[in-house]
Length: 204
Ligand SMILES: N[C@@H](CCC(=O)N[C@@H](CS)C(=O)NCC(=O)O)C(=O)O
Image (cartoon, rainbow, N blue to C red; front, side, top):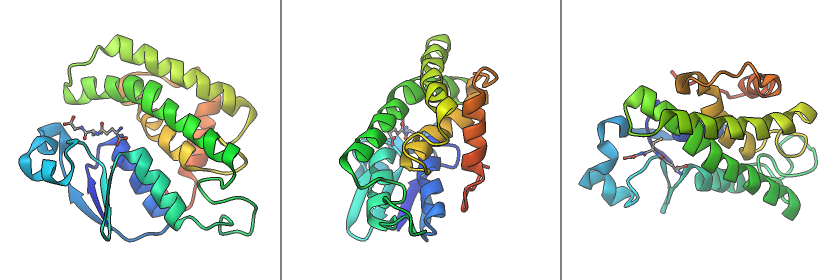
């Protein structure tokens, strides 16, 4: 497998986390999106969308971190979770469980990406986004996470799923978006649970 990847991209980090937690081997093809390398003709031939991450697995080429998480969980996540427990590892097999995962992927793709990730991109990489508006959007997402995690350890069911990984990275990088997590104790405890999962690797 090959991952078109940038170390400091939270979207790429989501995918690296799952690859590492599943114990899968892969090559990293560095593409520095902060220097415009996603907009070159060479990279556009890989993905016309001009964004990382992109995963290649044999003849399959996939763009979008959420689609890649979904694929890896279905393709390589053990049906019984690897520990004999009920339900698929990383992506529940039942319709309601799967739909709940999609619900959190939507939060990841909206409040967290357009909020926390863009505030970080503006502050860290000089992207032209309205920092205050993005931070407010990010806090709206954090409030939704906090409400769920006050009552539960994980976003869906009783174990970590791709919903947790998808929502995690830009929350873990919230300090770079200058959004404090002090008001979100359940979110901080959840971040610590994710960082304790086998195979976890921090962003450099
Ligand atoms: N929804 C996409 C977002 C991907 C995305 O925004 N990638 C950024 C890096 S974190 C990128 O490649 N930007 C390239 C550009 O704006 O030229 C995903 O989840 O994969």
